[in-house]
Image (cartoon, rainbow over all chains, first blue to last red; front, side, top):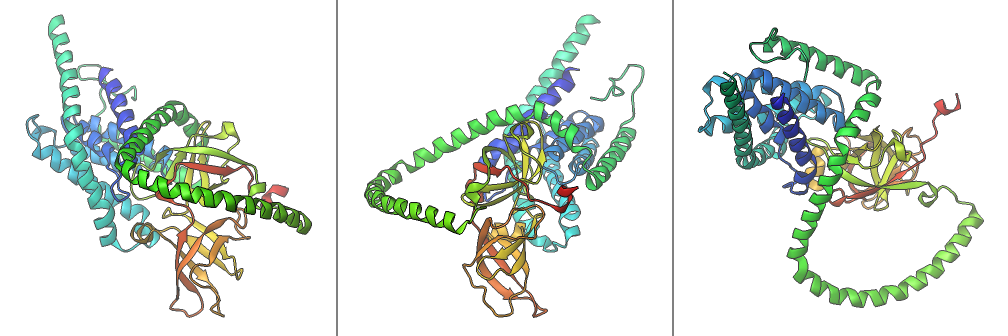
Length: 172
Length: 292
């Protein structure tokens, strides 16, 4: 229950920051994708189930407000969260290489699938342009933001886990 | 969260791959439904409006505040110099203004004589503030802080700086979504003001990011009358856009390979990078269906 509440709170916070505050600090019209950070973190810190649920809700939120088609972001985010969850066994808290590479891979995947589904199918063929000017800059900005947001997520999730463990011990 | 997801040790847990499968089906169903009908719009938009929009308003205000303050600090010196020159300009402009006011008085008289109605001033408009921008970087969609409670409906036209911003594509009780002219998925029927030739104005992410322009195509101009700098307005035959709203100015024109039509780019009249307030025209284009 607490986990779900905290997830919802983080989702709200990250979504709002992404589509309001970070749009004022957009570099060359490119803003970061904070929801990818959240989805991937939930995936590899908990499990694939948490990852895919977080991805689904993050995506559906984007779709309701901005999407031309309902459900498309939800689907992409959900699969990214699910895949990130598969790296759960390799994850330990001190490591920063694995989370970093998952964020990069996740954001690039998101960009590629979104481009293919919504741009390539409408005869926008200049793939290298979109790669160099939208997908890669967004990934780099996302990675920079992850330096600030990932430790925050790690701290909160670990704290929640500790509270849960202590309570279980207390009752035993 | 869904009630079937429970912690380990409780009665029933759903393996994640089945959950993935179910949710994928749900997403696909949503996509199909939202692509073919707009039955889902109303309930979904209403829920979203209750939960998210109040926060968006707050954060957006704070974001604007911080952004403005940081710009202020950087610009104080510049502003002092500018102030001097502006003061001179004010004197000049006051003089000019009085002269123009006389002209306007005369113009109004002449207009009523010629019975030209239907200029933009005569549409009922309502102002709104932009509170959020597209979460991704592929489209240019805005969220504004007024919705159906303020009389806004889907397909109403949106203006700013005297030019066309776009149209309303989704409405909640206290928010509305605007698809802008520069968005990659927007296509508008327009015309060249000077020659009345029709054309299609379509947003393009690539042209906008590299040159700040939108594309146009399907212009038939056999006499080569269309020149760089000509005004492009919304056309008469569009079923979503009111006629004669300024879209922008021709930036360049080139012949298509079929030698019949021309295409090129248009510089939009609106400065989309610094857009914060917009006007919504509370009148919709009359369509044939309205008669029924």
